Image 1 (spheres, one colour):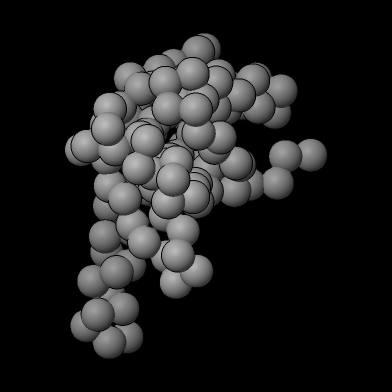
Image 2 (cartoon, helix red, strand yellow):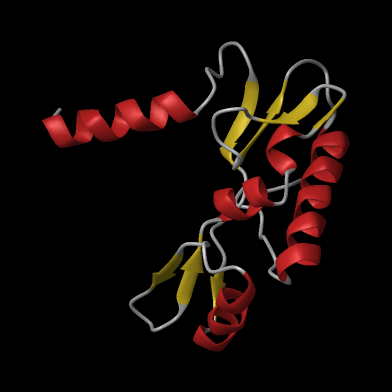
Length: 127
């Protein structure tokens, strides 16, 4: 591997749980894409959010930053929790059911929507 590819893998591995030890689907939510108008409105109240321009003249927000700033990073319900090192990752530390994980994810979505009026879409396929 090239040095850059190795560095990227090292960074990713430092933020993700070892799936041999902790159950996880990896990154659970997509980074939301919003209109420039919505970004302008948000920036009035939340100037410290990261606003990343996209090629199609929209704005990408960091889902991890939104989750963290809503206080969800410390959330836990039974065996389901937000991973300590990366708020985009939801982990199953035991015997949580799919329904419990989906419910937990929905609560995170509601917290972000209530604070920012931004909808987080799951990146995982929930079946």
